[in-house]
Amino acid sequence: MNENDTITAICSGIGGSIALIRISGSKALQIGNTVWKAKRPLSLEYSRKLILGKLLPCSNSPGETAFAVFMKGTNTFTGEDIVEIHAHGGSTNSRRILKAIIECGARQAEPGEFTYRAFANGKIDLTQAEAVCDFITAHNETALHMAERQMDGTLGRNIKAIREVYLGILAECEARVDFPEEELDFIPIKEHLKMINTSDNELISLYETRYEGKIIRDGVRIVIAGKPNAGKSSLMNLLLGYDRAITTDIPGTTRDTLEEFVNIRGIPVKLIDTAGLRYSDDIIESLGIQKTIDSMQSSQIVLWLLDASSNINDEISSMKNYLKSDNNVITVWNKSDLLAQGALLPETGHETAAISVKNESGIDKLLDIIESKVLGQRHLESNEVAVSQRHANFIRQALDTIPDIINNLKLENWELASIGLKSVTNMLGAITGEDATLDIYETIFSKFCIGK
Image (tube, rainbow, N blue to C red; front, top):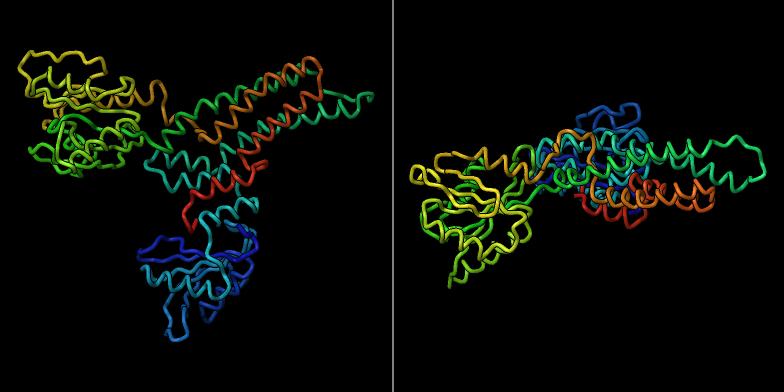
């Protein structure tokens, strides 16, 4: 990304009632006053004031009423001069305004480039930049709150504080190497070991949030599988709270996978309805059945629906033919309201819930099992921060290096201790951005949409 260019993008999404176009860079004010005119031009005097004027996106245009605001760097999101234009929405009008701005000397922003400039100009650290993306992609309140805390700098501050401890010890180790004959007032080794032990425990606590972080950010894939007419689509509709899947008494109604996000006990879930598993010589249904098998293999949990009103032995036999793994399966006996009074359902070797989608009974028990299977004893709301897989990888590397540092400090091998300490500070710096490499930047910011 060229950080010297003035960049622009539509920041409000395409097709809404209001279009917000942002311009950031040294030429933002000049370009803003070229495409937009008012009695009071955009200027430092009227900085941060929304002014009503007219857009003149082309020479033959009579002009469109629009608001504009100028914000002087460095006290802006990107740290640069920013002009924002608030105009009538619609994809055609938004693109016409964007085209006019580009013709005046701005460049179309790359994905995540506004956020990248905020990071490059020291307005945010790398964890806060990642939180912007988490905020946009959040699927429930838990994910939203976690993104807000990370955007506020909670994780970054924790990592930086730990890094400062290791930087301080590193400075003393290097001083011991450089000035071995000097009678300097060095901190006793046991004090360093205490600080390392405290910081090590803090890193372990952060590392242990990686599972919650993955759930919050990525959600859990739960596939509903089973024979035709077991009630898979009806269960999906019930869990979603609205009719998403078509339901009929005709076997094979669902011929493709249907995917929707739903919040189950605070857990973001991608719920997948699938084609009923059976032999079929129908080409389309067979393709749907193969997609069902693929979805089962790529999901964290399989809700295997069995028909309690059908031949129970046949139901279990069919189940065992298709299931390749027992670790992620929850057996769900649907239509349990049709069981004869006192009748018992056989064990399947999996955690089991007996439900009736028709009567909406047994659903709480099923949700309890799902919550327990996903979280165990964890609680998503209890963590102030939850690290991502990227953060966890660097923390793990740092934790693996710390035992050697401790050993070398005890043996007074200052040079070897320094090497380990530099490695740890670099790993922690890669999380917050102080020591991140270009490929890390590209990986993170490539996930952003244009306009952020």
